[in-house]
Image (tube, rainbow, N blue to C red):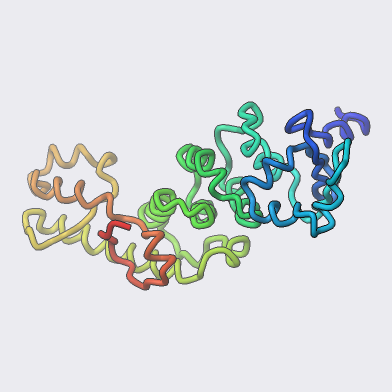
Length: 266
């Protein structure tokens, strides 16, 4: 069990040992030692803050020891992770993040305007993120903030295919300031559209006028081999259309109310 001394020590985190800046973060006042140059380079927020005309930048002029910058409203663990990525401290960066943690990182990255600097790391987190249906909306919100069109499409696709309840029942309090509520309408419209198309291909898989998507191909693959009504032609159309499920981030950002499949190249 950690004692007071161990707890105090754990609050002093050297992202880099020779950093010229100490971020004093959160109510617990965790101390993160970093390079101000790295923060200024990747973040417009910090770049403006560290200009000599402002108090924070003025305090750093001619200092031989690290300058402290209080950030009482931020989450220390989240900012530590972001700073580790920015400073290329790979050993401090986890390979996977929970949906909740991923959203926290996305919110803070958006706050400090340093999305581009975490593009590579966030892409890896999205690929490895395992989310239950109830957490997929958080993943979609994180993808929205990171402007990751692929992750946004895949998370909304999973909501359309794997979630059977009302979308209004999903947690929304922690993302309502991030993503417009009309996402629920678009998800429901596309889910209904998908169900109709699936029903159409089951009833008449050879009708070329029917365009549909079958989301569970792998789970029911045996049916294609053993039931004559599932023809090769119908199966190929289902597989071809499967990639179209999910909301298009570019269309969603533009305010489009079209829920059907986007075929545009953005």
